Length: 495
Image (cartoon, rainbow, N blue to C red; front, side, top):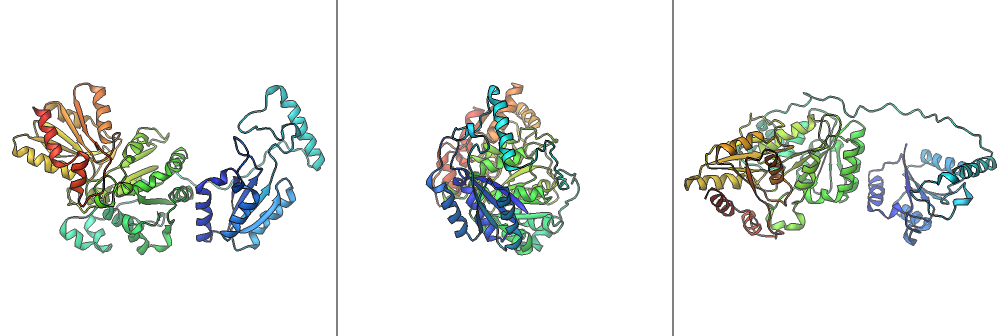
């Protein structure tokens, strides 16, 4: 049995009904939700929509077994719980309660979040004892709870997952044609990696929010349907469901558009507090998806997740590691890293097909970067899909006689010293290029440079809220991070 205690004021929250819907949809019939209906929130009475009558009607409409009780009658509570054994539905209990019950002197006052003053504490405890005596209950000052055996959520898994080479995995996943072209979107590489990981352990599970044919989690669904959970368009509940699976020892990969995962910021924050071992995957990030438009583009997620990458979670890992691959090889290998890491990770993937940058046997450490070109005049640093634009800009700059270092940053937190050392050797200037809002790659490099004081860091991030366009290049140009803009800015920096 799983119990959830819910306040009537809290029942205005959207996730409550996302969860009720999900529980019905997946026939999770050992769940009991008890709504304590005392008609008070924190600041005042609840609305009519959170009344006991309407909550009961909602639960009935969702197809739950419904019991309405006096929440202060122990036998009524016990009998209601027993209905869970006889019903083949999830159980909803609407319990009518009184805020401050058992202590007549505080009934009707708003004591939400406020302690009883010290000079009233003895009187309040006396009233509680009188209520106990009226009920004929025995005083019990010893708390006796035997918890279930704990799940080792943070057991060592180093070396558990070792994926085959990408070529073999793509063939098994039906993507051999893409391999022959040496081009695949990073979201496609995620799908391939997820299938390969699923073949290694039944602890790997996948959750998606009605976009699995875009995130490519549907590849896992096809291969392992019993370990795929369709959560529909309810991202907050999906994240919480994944946290629950992680607590039970699973390794959940939770995918949606990066933009839509941002709806679950509170759930992600709470997951970090509980050190949940979840793997978040946001596809269609940045502005390279072009025609889908800004409502689908994740462009502030870099700043949010990067901020968590610099927080110690207390067991040797950051609160969240952020991975941002530029090609299919790095995306595939970073999925392996995520499965072997203990703690929350976020993988940022892209819609467009992109050529392979790396060889199949390339390895990717948690230092977070690779040097792709060596130069003597300026250092260009990029991440994700924008690495391809940066390489093109470096090529054209080379034709103008401006030799460039080019670095691909694929992981945060980043160990930036080697990048800054290279910058010192090539004139002391770094130009970062990314298709998201400020707070991502540029901030990571600039913060590291500020501690040294010998490197100038200039950042190219989105200068406008993006629009829909026919091609990614049009959006890049409109938002100020197109190839020509990179060339122009680099030329300014080298004089």
